[in-house]
Image (tube, rainbow, N blue to C red; front, side, top):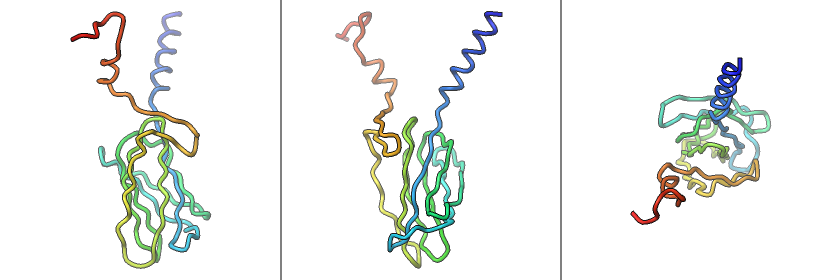
Length: 147
């Protein structure tokens, strides 16, 4: 019985580590007014999967349960130019893509640099991703610092 309980706890811990985050934002027109019911899609550039949603009447949107990776967010609304922006979503760091859409034909969107510190407005937290190389370079009592 203890073995089954241990197996169940291990499975729950592994499942809990499968981190997903969200992409959220606000859609506004050139004058700053909210754009209701815009069509939003986020394409994972690594896997090709597309997640879509519709904006609210207040111009906000939310795409939940997004796996970390590189995405291209596309926002369209009738009578307004299409908005496209690439964003890198890191584990534990929700992404915000706010769009300002102009009238008429499509115009190129300004690229926004990735936030290298991992600071977020939504949770007031600070995080970063640690690579395997960084972990192996950490000093240890059992490893010599000299190669």
